[in-house]
Length: 178
Image (cartoon, rainbow, N blue to C red; front, side):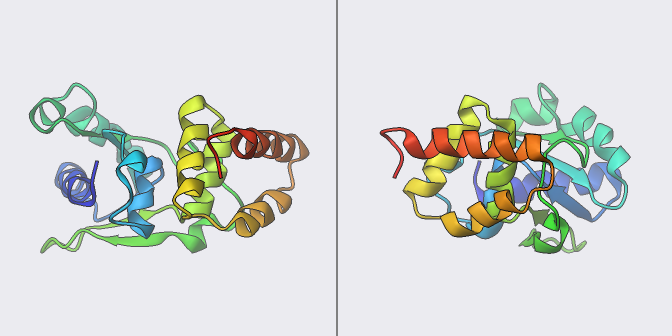
């Protein structure tokens, strides 16, 4: 997915829900910080999002422009309507959201996870695709390791902190990482 495709998803989500502000939490949130992100970071064909002010309307997004919808079949990408608690995020993430301009007349905007918050959520999920995503962020020097480390160190839940540290060790110890 590229930035224009994410804009298309957000415009379509706005048309479906009547909402104007959407939070983007999945891997494609990187487009908020890096609209021209390397292709290796844009492999996903889904944009994980929910309406900021009415998150319950995410189900409308999923139903109308979600996976296997006519929208997906026509364009090859889709919106995944998610809940605010879908991703595990560090304290204060809401204040660090990155505005992503959709540039449509109705004023729709995306609020994308800041890239270190995105990496935190990927470390918490810990799936192979998440580990690889973080490796690519590091490979392309799009993350500040110290900033990511500070986010992890500030985590109050000790079990989560251990998981984050373990997964970061996996990311950084692989031969393919930098």
